[in-house]
Image 1 (cartoon, helix red, strand yellow):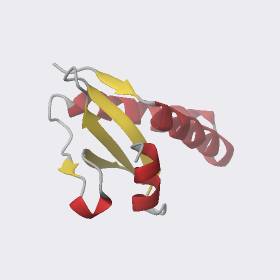
Image 2 (cartoon, helix red, strand yellow):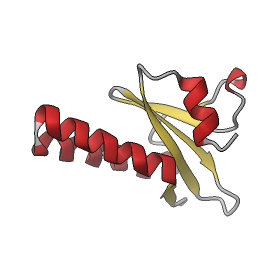
Image 3 (cartoon, rainbow, N blue to C red):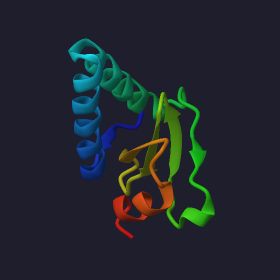
Image 4 (cartoon, rainbow, N blue to C red):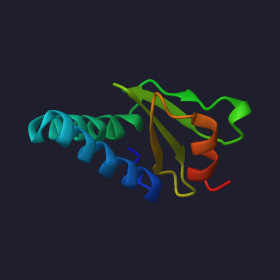
Amino acid sequence: MSRFLVQDAASHRIDEIYQYTLKEWGAAQAEVYVTGLFDHFAKVGTHEVLSRPVPAEFGVEGFFFRYEKHFVYWRYLSNGDIGIVTILHERMHQIGWLKDDFGL
Protein backbone atom coordinates (compact mmCIF):
# COMPACT_ATOMS: atom_id res chain seq x y z
CA MET A 1 0.00 0.00 0.00
CA SER A 2 1.35 3.40 -1.01
CA ARG A 3 1.72 6.20 1.46
CA PHE A 4 0.90 9.77 0.53
CA LEU A 5 2.95 12.89 1.10
CA VAL A 6 1.35 16.33 0.99
CA GLN A 7 3.82 18.53 -0.84
CA ASP A 8 4.39 22.24 -0.13
CA ALA A 9 1.96 23.75 -2.66
CA ALA A 10 -0.81 21.36 -1.57
CA SER A 11 -0.15 22.09 2.09
CA HIS A 12 -0.48 25.80 1.41
CA ARG A 13 -3.75 25.25 -0.49
CA ILE A 14 -5.16 23.12 2.35
CA ASP A 15 -4.48 25.98 4.75
CA GLU A 16 -6.24 28.41 2.38
CA ILE A 17 -9.21 26.08 1.97
CA TYR A 18 -9.52 25.63 5.73
CA GLN A 19 -9.35 29.38 6.43
CA TYR A 20 -11.87 30.23 3.71
CA THR A 21 -14.31 27.52 4.82
CA LEU A 22 -13.89 28.55 8.47
CA LYS A 23 -14.72 32.16 7.60
CA GLU A 24 -17.68 31.34 5.35
CA TRP A 25 -19.26 28.30 7.02
CA GLY A 26 -17.66 27.80 10.43
CA ALA A 27 -15.23 25.49 12.17
CA ALA A 28 -17.32 22.32 11.92
CA GLN A 29 -17.66 22.57 8.12
CA ALA A 30 -13.98 23.47 7.71
CA GLU A 31 -13.03 20.36 9.66
CA VAL A 32 -15.41 18.15 7.65
CA TYR A 33 -14.08 19.47 4.32
CA VAL A 34 -10.38 19.11 5.13
CA THR A 35 -10.91 15.70 6.75
CA GLY A 36 -12.69 14.60 3.58
CA LEU A 37 -9.71 15.71 1.51
CA PHE A 38 -7.34 13.62 3.62
CA ASP A 39 -9.68 10.63 3.45
CA HIS A 40 -9.54 10.87 -0.34
CA PHE A 41 -5.72 11.21 -0.33
CA ALA A 42 -5.50 7.93 1.58
CA LYS A 43 -7.73 6.18 -0.96
CA VAL A 44 -5.64 7.10 -4.02
CA GLY A 45 -3.15 4.27 -3.45
CA THR A 46 -5.91 1.66 -3.14
CA HIS A 47 -7.70 2.98 -6.23
CA GLU A 48 -10.84 3.73 -4.23
CA VAL A 49 -10.71 7.23 -5.72
CA LEU A 50 -11.04 7.40 -9.48
CA SER A 51 -8.13 9.40 -10.88
CA ARG A 52 -7.44 10.41 -14.45
CA PRO A 53 -4.15 11.36 -16.11
CA VAL A 54 -3.46 15.08 -16.36
CA PRO A 55 -4.15 16.08 -20.00
CA ALA A 56 -0.98 16.29 -22.11
CA GLU A 57 -1.61 19.94 -22.98
CA PHE A 58 -1.03 20.84 -19.33
CA GLY A 59 2.63 19.86 -19.77
CA VAL A 60 2.96 17.92 -16.49
CA GLU A 61 2.95 14.23 -15.67
CA GLY A 62 0.52 13.16 -13.00
CA PHE A 63 -3.06 12.41 -12.18
CA PHE A 64 -6.06 14.22 -10.75
CA PHE A 65 -9.42 13.63 -9.15
CA ARG A 66 -12.25 15.88 -8.17
CA TYR A 67 -13.26 16.44 -4.56
CA GLU A 68 -16.32 18.65 -4.14
CA LYS A 69 -15.33 22.04 -5.68
CA HIS A 70 -11.61 21.22 -6.00
CA PHE A 71 -9.30 19.26 -8.24
CA VAL A 72 -6.54 17.33 -6.46
CA TYR A 73 -3.38 16.77 -8.51
CA TRP A 74 -0.93 14.04 -7.59
CA ARG A 75 1.97 12.00 -8.94
CA TYR A 76 3.99 8.95 -8.07
CA LEU A 77 7.23 9.80 -6.26
CA SER A 78 10.52 8.04 -7.00
CA ASN A 79 10.06 5.73 -3.99
CA GLY A 80 6.57 4.69 -5.14
CA ASP A 81 4.69 6.86 -2.66
CA ILE A 82 2.01 9.29 -3.80
CA GLY A 83 2.81 13.00 -3.79
CA ILE A 84 -0.20 15.28 -3.41
CA VAL A 85 1.12 18.14 -5.55
CA THR A 86 -1.61 20.74 -5.38
CA ILE A 87 -5.31 21.35 -4.90
CA LEU A 88 -7.03 23.87 -7.16
CA HIS A 89 -10.53 25.28 -6.96
CA GLU A 90 -12.65 24.60 -10.03
CA ARG A 91 -12.58 28.33 -10.90
CA MET A 92 -8.77 28.59 -10.93
CA HIS A 93 -6.91 28.58 -14.25
CA GLN A 94 -5.55 25.06 -14.06
CA ILE A 95 -2.65 25.18 -16.56
CA GLY A 96 -0.90 28.20 -15.07
CA TRP A 97 -1.14 27.00 -11.48
CA LEU A 98 -0.12 23.45 -12.35
CA LYS A 99 3.11 24.45 -14.04
CA ASP A 100 4.06 26.50 -10.99
CA ASP A 101 3.07 23.85 -8.46
CA PHE A 102 4.71 20.98 -10.38
CA GLY A 103 7.89 23.08 -10.51
CA LEU A 104 7.97 23.69 -14.27
